[in-house]
Image 1 (tube, rainbow, N blue to C red):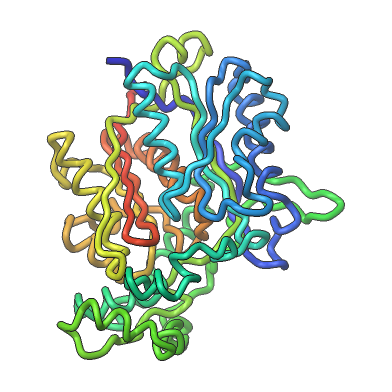
Image 2: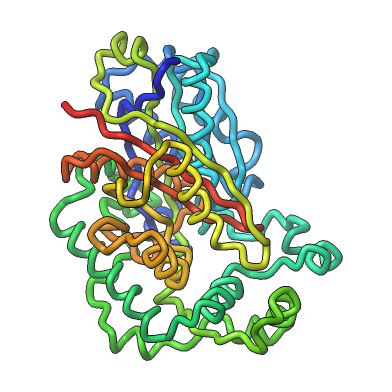
Length: 403
């Protein structure tokens, strides 16, 4: 069976998902094309040899509609023969794009492809597609769909986590991210977005708050109490009557910060790598997609991790690096406890609460970051995973290839 090899990885900085954010004036296609050009420049890749581009994107409407992957490939000048597809598993879209492309490589249906994701939350806001999952009252009532923040507070309540524990994790990820940026950890893959007439440009993850302290986090109000009082708590409690009330403990400091950004991975089989003159950096061993109750929702990423590890005949103790999307502190604490994944193995350079969550791009960023961290620490196995809306989770297992 052919192998699915990671040949290279690039990403943009993550900008604040705000009209004041440094990437707001850049369209999602701008970000992808910028990375496609960078990928060609740094690898010497002949783009016409790429067979397909698969991008994850959670809000496929307006500037992110119309199969943005194919559009970007055309605008980048990669040629009429380079196909494109855009996939949606909500926040897990980017990691799913990597998993899909790797599966096609292992099956022999693809020789060389690009997988990644993009999201400009500042230009295409969350829920703007008005999907029935969050905009149709009958669908919401039947499924029991709740906002992600309500699901996070439900998980914290069920697990018995305290506000102090949640805040401590929020502080930890900010400190890790600040230290990683100061040390230039992301320099190998981060492609700065240059300034233009309408944009100041960006060369770092804009959301990192190096001055965060335990005191500033403790002073933040609960972020989802008002939403819960508007009927969301009632939906959640109807599904989980084991608790009589939801403790609203998450704040903006212990929730993922919304961001704009994009990421691409170049994936190929051994023959494609040789033809391109590139040394494989890692192999994708497998992927897992799982789903859980849509109210509890955010545990699916952990479930996917457990599944992909078990399928490979490994144990959590065999994994050197876990890159787990920080969909609120409670889920990170649960993950760390259940998989015995201490701070040195789980998100060692910070995560989406500190650096930003660009929905469709996040999973691809995590896979690339996982490969880079394995190279830094001479590790062997790594897992990247994301939990998405409606109880979806996707995980990808990679193995570093020693130089």
